[in-house]
Amino acid sequence: GENVEQHPSTLSVQEGDSAVIKCTYSDSASNYFPWYKQELGKGPQLIIDIRSNVGEKKDQRIAVTLNKTAKHFSLHITETQPEDSAVYFCAASIFPNDYKLSFGAGTTVTVRA
Amino acid sequence: EAGVVQSPRYKIIEKKQPVAFWCNPISGHNTLYWYRQNLGQGPELLIRYENEEAVDDSQLPKDRFSAERLKGVDSTLKIQPAELGDSAVYLCASSLSANEQFFGPGTRLTVL
Image (cartoon, rainbow over all chains, first blue to last red; front, side, top):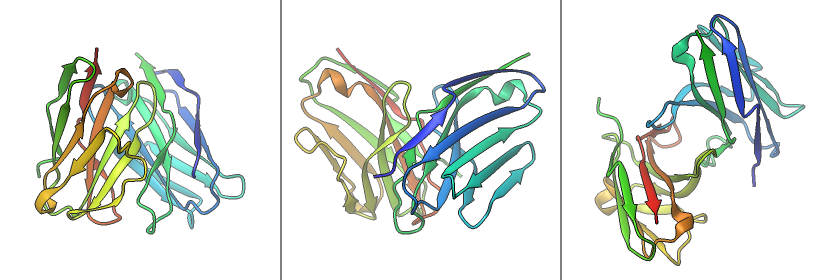
């Protein structure tokens, strides 16, 4: 099955700086890569996703890049704010045939004011 | 629009006791998922329903776990008997077919 590895496990950044989280996946058939944000006491919430026919996608301060050859994808958060502090999870699946999301272990991001 | 509702939010039980979790998905979502999230880990799929049919339960420990989704709406996940290693957050999610999965807040289970 799919194996997703995520780094780093914790990340502390100064407010206004950028944060980068990297993930690798093992199954070359995976073609859908969502990122989730989980705040304390809440379920994961989708913040951005990318499909394999796209190399980069941006939504305001959040961007995701995908390198299918190397089987890795990254989340970039620019101009970080205190409300960006949370646990971030990457995931991979084979869309639309396989609904199963394989998650990374998560990155705890702390934005220092 | 109401999100995915789960209850209870917290449950503390002693080992060997039974426990049940309830999930009400977003209205109209035909696909429902139960995930288990261990401390410091990402969610892991236990079972997926398409309407009332369990179409992927390969990761569900069937000796002690059971689930049902009567009438294709609400769902219940049960553990009997619970073991210490079952302590985790149990997340329910729903989606409209293969589209975005929306997660509930989860039930945090502690087995003593």
